[in-house]
Amino acid sequence: MTKTVIPIGPQHPLLKEPLAFQIMLEGERVTDSTMRMGYVHRGIERLCQERTFIQNIHLVERVCGICSHVHAMTYCRAVELLLGINVPPRAAYLRALLCELERIHSHLLWLGVLARNVGLDTIFMYAWRDREVALDIMEALSGGRVSHAVNIIGGVRSDVTPEQREEILEQLTTLDRQVNWLLGVVEHERSLQTRTKGVGLLSLQQVRRYCVVGPVARASGLDADMRRDEPRTPYDRLSFNVPMHTAGDVWARTLVRMQETLISVELCRDILKEMPEGPLAVRAPRRVPPGEAISRSEAPRGELFYYVRSDGSDTPARVKIRTPTLPSLLTLPQQLKGVTMADVSVVLSGVDLCIACADR
Amino acid sequence: MEQTRTYDRLPTPRGTKMQREEGPKACRKSLGPGAEGSSRQQIAGDSRTEPTKRRLQRYVDAVVRWARRKSPWILHYNSGGCNGCDIEILATLTPRYDVERLGILKEGSPRHADILLCTGPVTLQSRDRLRRIYEQMPEPKWVVSVGTCSCSGGVFKGAINVVGSVDQVVPVDMYIPGCPCRPEAIIDGLAQLLRSIE
Image (cartoon, rainbow over all chains, first blue to last red; front, top):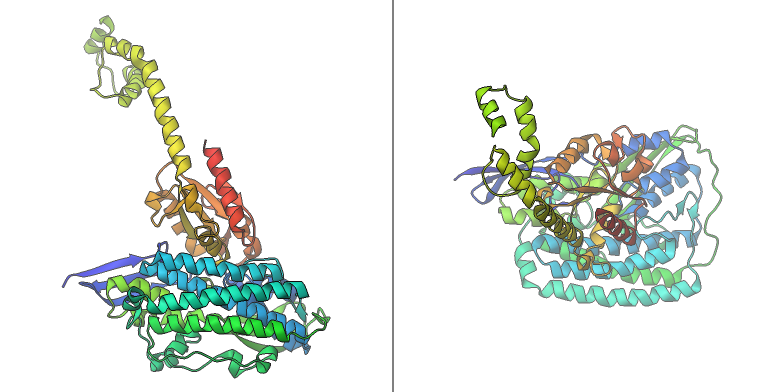
């Protein structure tokens, strides 16, 4: 067999973001692969130490453009823990609403990217068309399509008026119908199944060893969801399922994400219906007392972790961000072993790469 | 003819008078078919057909300009951004905004692209790669910096691993600010760039 080395990236039509691979092939099969990261490393954690607690909200929102709200929310929560303040219930509901909308938009975006990399441009176009509905709702809520800037330490900035609420509920019905239809298409599309079934296998043992979180872990049978395991204000009052599959391939991940999207639409509806009245934010002091705090939440790609340490000044002494994409990125060389060259694109898109998150 | 004979008798070293005199003629000759001549008659003949050739060239140039304006192929490179502008660039290709109806096509290889869309600040590790991608693109080429970070460094200005804006690495023709910039802004920026090409 002839041995070939194929470089992929950092600029490649397959990848939206820069990431470099060297793929060693023997004939048509991948025998080994190496990965080079760090093209998007900006040094955000270090930059956080140079800016004030309030400026950092703006900065951590730009760790990742797809899950921008959940980053800012988790950071704010950590600082609120340090300050010892509780956000008003309405603010917690509004934060959760944006979180769920972000999950819908992220999962539909991912489905589109997977379909495009598999060669089904039609599903890409449909998924991204439906995603625009979620973006419209977020724009109505916050004024921004992708980054929202609604979080402040102690609560949120923008509110939902009763008219907006009715309008959003109507849009959610559209979204529900479209996502259901899309799930039907995906389930019956034989070419998508042929490409994704049995590709990018990850066993439960490997998931545990690499500390993989989120939909990738749930598709391999690891039952973990921060919303349910560590319930915070809106989620402890809402009932929802956590979709689980055990196959551990890209097809299982597709199903997990699509079912999660439907559950998120349902959650958005419940949140809007049960949202209590009240203030949006409490006043937070500028100086943060010394101490350390951790905060965890379920981002679209899994558990997001923030550690914030304060030394009593107006800038944090340390901010550590653990993003959900990094461990799933590290499993890629394992997943690539043994697949054919044509399936590399499926494996790479199967884990929902977000290199901006992973590199920071 | 006399002059030619003089040159034949007195060989001149390379790069002196003779070559300098032949310079413009050689340039003109390279436009049309036929071997390079050195006699004065041929030069005279050239200058007679020249207006026709120039007119033809003008028409060809106009057609090429028109074609370039009608169908620019874009290449997208994220040199260290947060993904926000990248998904907005991709959103411009999808049904709601659909820039393909304007002839704009996203291209995967720098060797086929006309316009480079850059997002994000330039990080130390991306810098050389960005320059290389720019050099790989064939002339004529344009660079559009999409997003505030790409225009000025944005929130990442002063970070240890960030070089700064895109124009510190490659020449930029159009700046589209916004964090992230909306798809409408990207389409408007591209339309203005295409207008300026004409």
